[in-house]
Length: 545
Image (cartoon, rainbow, N blue to C red; front, side, top):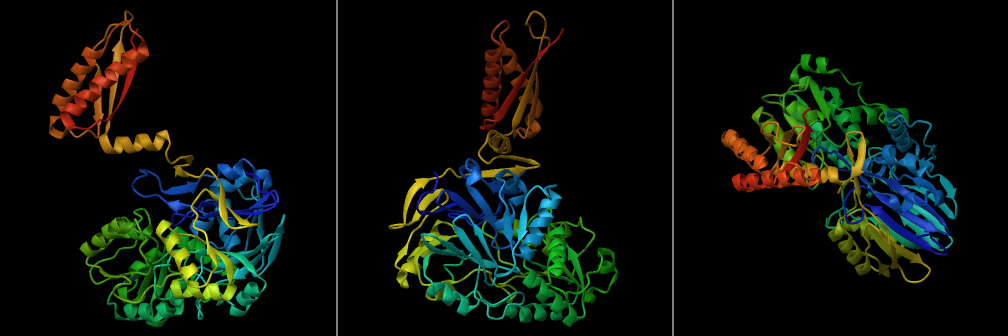
């Protein structure tokens, strides 16, 4: 679809799910993209860590894509850039801190100079085709959270990105009520708004309020203290550094992403007074009461620093009397992985503190009172909920309508919504989907490789090598090797039975493909009789000369 004399909105990610945010606005034959994020894989994608959005809809008309505008530096908003931006061939626009994070990612992937990255000053304005876009400072858990005022010939849109109301932010600026009211005074056609915490009846709370809870826990601890939080939460890093100074503890950083955030933050004027980190060796030499470790891995990632510390494979060690503070919320789907690490820590004698035991975390997303306040500030004609699962989006729409917003439209990934002229409505559907980053290769999430891997994981694999002589006769018994097939102590008997089945199924002189299929089915039937499973069976015919 090519946008005409109209204003179009289409999410390719982040609507109907939390994470992987990608939003398109179209007008007079041009598109802009707001954010290009990723999400993290769950166990249903074996061997995969990162999931990327399918961008075929915009890739087929990339010459119409005027630019990619980034609201802030979280992975679910910028994480897919190193893997997909080069193909889109569109310039990137971000404020300095976010641009610093993006530059580092592009450099790591060898793309420095291949993708045009344009830093934009805080509060700056850019013009891309028929769009005039102004960055509007909003509070979040990372420096330089921005909403975007998008001015178009068919009305103005305020795209919030991730935000909250924080009158006493540790880093960055409190949202300017004057600016937001002025935006509303000029008229807002549509508020495209974060829905993550729409079920929370209370405001998210100020980042400054976390200080007292973390300070109390660190002061009471009798051993080493480890705090795990989202690496990108630079405001929390500032608070942790302050707590370390106040409790006489040296800070040790464990995790590459934490190192990167600290480096970029300090290069752009943030975290200037953060204590100089000490090495792992020094952290282990110092008395336990003089060490505070900040580590990645609070979502249960086994290869992150906390997972390796809990498993005893990291240079940093924890033991009896030490304390681990989970200064982050649990992302849905990570409960089992986090519980596993907590159990490992408990086996070491570590005391575990979460937000259930102490006030050690606040969200970076708006609760219901904050959403209502935003409606009152900008007074939109339409609310378009994004950044949430289906239940979040529908509840956000109900909330907006119940507080005086005239219209709301619930959309999901792929819905092409005409915002103006006329009533907001779905006018088309774009293809959407997911890609996986598997090693260094990008693949369809529902493609043959991942589906085969799932089937192997569920039922196992059997390989069958059949040696055939010049006359097409068997040169020996087929070689059967099961992998992950539940036969255990009966393995030898099963292999013998499967070998016999393969031998009986082999027919000399026939079509090779039909012969392979006959052997495959015979071995799989044998496996099903033995186990109730239907493993993948791979048959190879080997010519023996």
